[in-house]
Image (cartoon, rainbow, N blue to C red; front, top):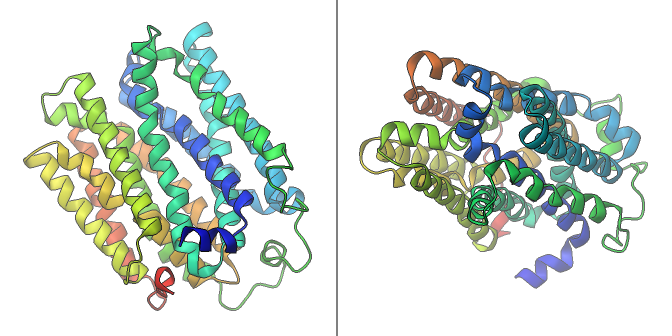
Length: 403
């Protein structure tokens, strides 16, 4: 089956998209395992520390909100080169803030560059998949793409553990991670690695150009896309809140030391990765909506297990969440086949706005009500996502994985 998929897709373009996600994910998710250390390093409250995530979300909003203009001007692949450069600058500034200048404001500036790169790359890499993979393999391609998010997230704490074991301080983490966006720039500029890409610019008649035309299709409207934006936004808020503050709430609920909590966090991302990799090769005879609902239901169940019985429940949330994002993206692609380039940036913009509010809200609630506020908020977010899965207005998605 793998050989059949490879023959039918634009492999170099897909590979570029995959590596872009891995690069930005391993950098962004490095903030989660070092978050308690950042609070101590810069003497911050949880509310102040939340700006590490909040500012990145703000710049992500700027990137997605302006995507219509920079995509139409530069095209998907040329834009990816510039965004990779932003990722390098942000990583460099973060490294300098922790090791040379020790200014929290400089670290936040690095977060801003990384946030803009994340917002932009999240659009380009998903559009590349949508335009270079046939519909019958699309759900599996999205799963493969976002399995790399889990893989990178798993490696983030592992990189920190390795750095410390080699005798370096945790502050050196961004020195090690900067290699990934540098390689992304090289990959993006090497035409030999992407020989099937003839032209960076949008072509006349392409879906990208069509999506930016003044005449919109009758099948697309903000009202129709809102349920999809909310079912994905509330999920992302729940996942990011749990993963970014995993060590904080696990050590508050259970008597765990730093190394043990790191291990449970690594297990969370390992399960997230495993689920998405399996989903790439497993033909599932269920609609996207059924899979989305099951993912959320099991995630809520594992939260209950983690709080009341064993912290391994928190790690298992990664497994139940693993299929959600690729299935949600495939549902959007199926629901707006002629307008995915309009629907996707809008959905990602809503995600960024809601994630911005979620980070600020959790930082404030944690300061006032304690670390258990993280669990309560994540439970509410996931429950709301489940509600919007039911409220989405389109017919159940086609079984693309079994076609």
